[in-house]
Image (cartoon, rainbow, N blue to C red; front, side, top):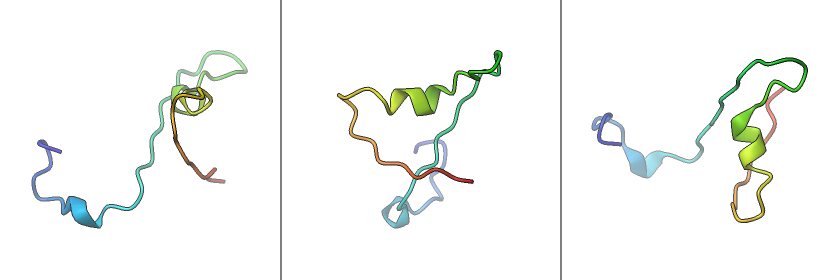
Length: 48
């Protein structure tokens, strides 16, 4: 947030998070895997 002081953070509704390490068939999408942990309360929609 400090890096982007011109952004009006009050108008922000959604954050799209993605991180991938393309390694074989599983691709190890860290953002998707983090959402599977029960201690994190993350809601997300799948983008097709």
